[in-house]
Image 1 (spheres, rainbow, N blue to C red):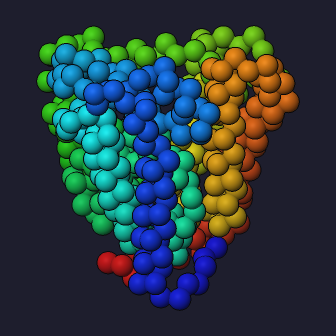
Image 2 (cartoon, rainbow, N blue to C red):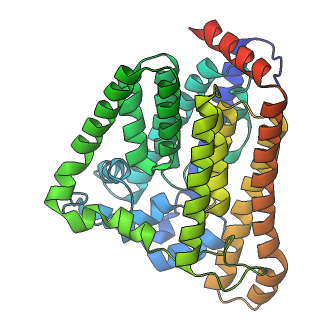
Length: 402
């Protein structure tokens, strides 16, 4: 489904203004007040209370203190960080300023520019639907909650380069994305299937070599320098328990971490294999990546609220029906309020905690998963009903911007 808008320049201006408003609002809302900062450092206990109460929590702010970024340690060599190396390097470089306020402002400024860059790329890939990335307000709650925009821009750059047949550049961008936030890895098996269908083994080999070389440059120095710190991202995520998500809620009990990991692994692998076959038969890489990622979000043992921003961007890239953007936006905003409201009740030991958890929180969790399932199913149905028109429309959009 496409939407006719007045002029490309008009959409671009409105989108840039919207993104600037959302990101600036996020910065002003999340910036810790002076009462929570002492000599440039964050008072963590007071910050937790303030941030949950005011729906103003940010990992970017809190981890400045709890990951000792203010000490300017060499990431992974002297400091253990539970993120892949690109994110860890960015965190550490942004913290080279004087105190948490400057660090957070630098992060905001870079991420504002990144958000504008993501829109610029989306506009050239899918001009009919890119506008909604700027228009809808998920950036207010998730643009500065974590470092997700860093991985998202590398993912979009990777797909942009692949669409322009700049295959080595695409592999490099995807490697940067994978080692920023991992999720861009969902494009890789479908690119393999696409190139295999075209019998283009030479390009596939070049992309594999470029990806591995970039991965080695990014990771080997830290893995050699301090393997335990470097590998903490993998051990931390492997050892994470069940969140209050699909496997631990009012209706599902008794599922162990091992069972959840095994079930989600099998489901995701089967979904990826199916969509690889589908791409091999002529399907689009981006459709396979978006739908398989939706499956992953539904069955994964942990769902952080900002993951909605990823599926939202993938939905726009894959040109899902416009109503799905509205549903995902409402689900993302609701999930944000629901998640941090329950954290406020729990951290403040409010007597309302039990009532909220039993009567509101898990209903919100259910709403999240229903929204994911309904939007992914709607996108799948729209694709199945009109695959040729989708492919032709996509091809015309590409030619218009080449």
